Length: 219
Image (cartoon, rainbow, N blue to C red; front, side, top):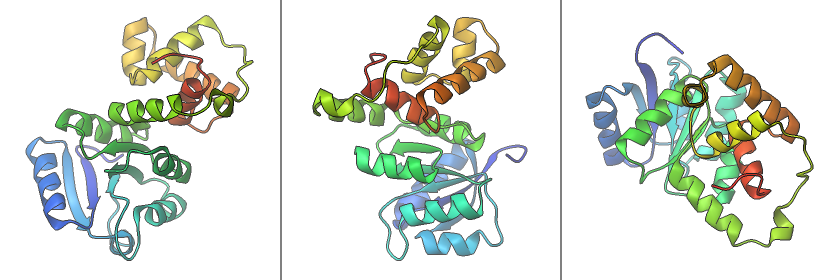
C-alpha cells in the first residue's frame, strides 16, 4: 500500500451513490478517492494510468459487472485490493466474489465505522467481511440440511488454534486478537496460517465459513 491515505476508486453505476460515498470517505479522512467509474469497463480503462490501493466495487452494473471486473483485476493487477460494496447479501454472490479474489465484502447498509474498518483492512491486503453479512450467511446455513454442510471436521486443532479461530469468527482482526490474547501479531498470523493449511481453505474468510459450516465454533 502507498504511504498516507489509501487511494481509492469507486465503481458503481449510480452517480449519486458514488458522490455520496466519495464525500463520506474524504470528509471522514478514510482515504482519497482518485477516480470514479460507472461500470467495470470504464474502471479497466482507468487502471491503465491510475493504480489505487483499493477498488470499491458494486456487483450489478451495465456493460461489465463487478464479477467480471474483479476477475480481471485479480489477474492483471494483483496488487490492487477489491472491496465489494453491494446490496447482495446471499451466499452465492459472496462465494463467487471471494473465490475470484476479492479481499472484502461489505453490504451497502453498513455504517461509517464498518466501511472505515473494511477499507483500512483491505488496503493492507487483509480480508474483511461485514458482520451483517456473516449473520445472513449463518441464517442461510441454519436453513440448510446438516448433512449438506459437513465436510471433514476430523482435524487435530490445538487449544490455541481453536481460541484464535473463535475470535476470527467473531470478526476480530489479527491485531485485535493479538492484543486480546497478549501475543504478538506474528504469532497470531502463524496460527491463522496453520488453520488455513489444516482446513485446506484459501483465506481467512474461507476459514471462517468452514468453521461455521462444520460447527467447529459457534457464533
